[in-house]
Length: 60
Image (cartoon, rainbow, N blue to C red):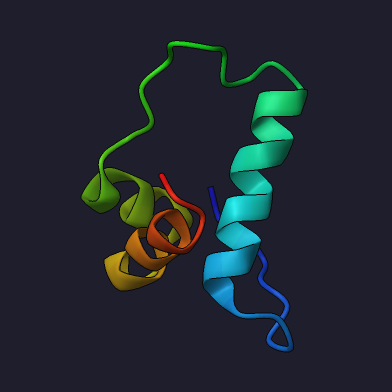
């Protein structure tokens, strides 16, 4: 999956928004485990630092 990111919004915020959208659309269900930082980073083609930061800043 190649996600097109808006360069005017920090990537970590966009990743968190993507995860929230997946929860709302039931792609991610309660109790589901999120992919590892490494796996999600490869999937989104972003640096793993951005995904880790998105989770840290949102209390996950």
